[in-house]
Length: 305
Image (cartoon, rainbow, N blue to C red; front, side):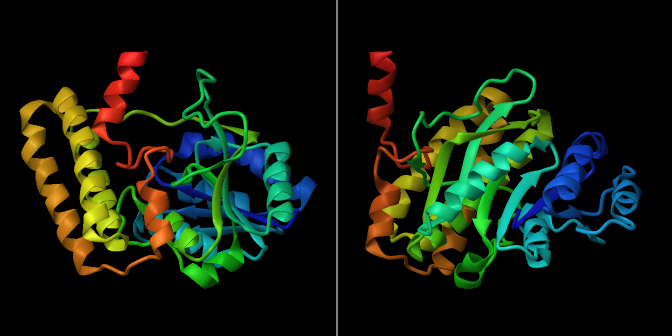
């Protein structure tokens, strides 16, 4: 297969170890290239990765001496990729040869497609982590846990925005890909498993604040104020509601501050995209909801249910 699989890991040795056997088998049996990126783990992952890569053709270990974050770690893996197509997965995302082959086949048939993402099931419950239906669907934001892209696309639109310290890098890249005339698509014809975990307490609240900052910044980085402001306000409101439920009133000033800094920094970095891309991202039928669904639409949906 003309595919480089890039797997990013940080301090999740057990998850990566359970994944590596299948990935190495794909290298041996299907000719895939494997790039394992470690973001300066301290749990024994480095030694395990080094041992897995030593003496093996088609396996590269990138052992970073500091945590580059999700965006920076993926960028390092993408730069090391030698194949025409790159499949990026988290260390707890489990893929099969069939799923990889199906995504690759679709990309070959659809030269307009820049990024494709499959159905992702929770590894424990087998429930869909999101559901866009039973047909291919143009989406506003691909799933970071598993997606395939064309390596040539990176030469056109650039790599992940490394200012996205947590969250937002998929949206930012999706917008730039669409602005370049390529498509970002979900396919129900390939399925993978993801064993993510929920973060609680301070870890969860810190991640929520960083997530909000990055999404609001990306809205204002690309869209005119008249479009970005409603998107970011709706997105802020959804996080305020969730933050109140999880962490109480103390979450409010933190999230308001994150939203304001995201708006300020996004306007400073603003590079406009074509009008058709703005229309695409402000369409209330777009999925996933990135702040494009008006509150009234959500209320109506709840009443109908």
